[in-house]
Picture 1: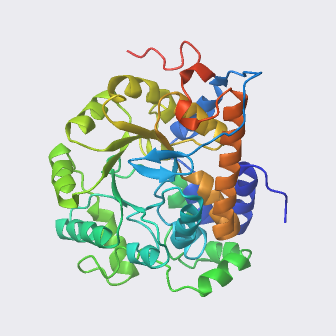
Picture 2 (picture 1 turned 45 degrees about the vertical axis):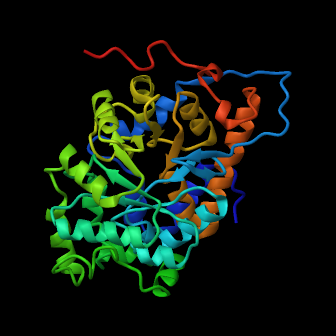
Picture 3 (picture 1 turned 30 degrees about the horizontal axis):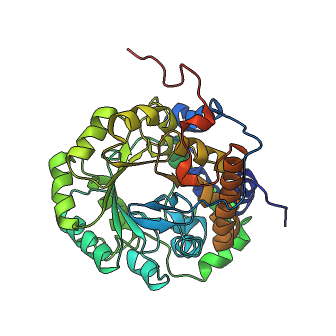
Length: 387
């Protein structure tokens, strides 16, 4: 076993152990992947201020997200097909998050169902919803999340239509994988993954199969999914879903000041500044570059979180210093899951926490809640002047 000290170490191991189509699903963006790349590279433009002769004892990263106590202001983002990176992946990730005392978010497009995760965890988790044309299905899955004790609804707003991801098309992405000469050759080298998958019955989208009308098998699932994302999603729909849910509501996919103001007006509890990890609108600005203007516009009215491009504890600290209340990680924990299962997710969280804690101390802060922009050196043109 290699010595693992960084998220990149987990990424390399993930690439070796997971089938190519599922690794590529996680590690790719839409179209030219410009936004996917800049989500991470824009973090590098921000520098940290080193401070010395400051008492660094008794540090804490404990905080709160939407009123819930967390060991650090980090949540696990919803990631579709998580259970294809490692058998029962959503359960493994949720268990690791529970033990680490950070929120886990299950995707509508998960392999394990809401009920599967609830049966294997004790702490409440969050449920992410894609709005579908089938209102009966949407209403039912909201009720299922409520019955499972989910403590927040994360409503994704930036996937009314699907951005093209070339690798998914070229790999023939399906869950479970369709057996072709190309996929069989790849799977033959991923014996560890295959043995684990043989040991579970969770191999397709269990939030949908058997719950959506006329979806009883893989073939009917594919045709249903292709036509179900609702292009008519609007603020009236969001208001209806907020009322239907009746609990904490987080709006994910905000990348514009005007949309952030609309989120405040609709009564959301939090927003996530996000471009879907660079998987939707290619050519959009990175989430970290858009964060300051959104904080300036609504940061005193609503809890602002961010995701997209976070690969280290330093990235987390930079986002918090720019005003985010919380940071959501997707690929960072998926690398760990694909590399080592539940232990890998725990390892990813440990790496991020250590980097966050140490970097915070070297910047002269002992409490993550006291982190502010004063610890940063931000280029004058970081946000850019766009006309």
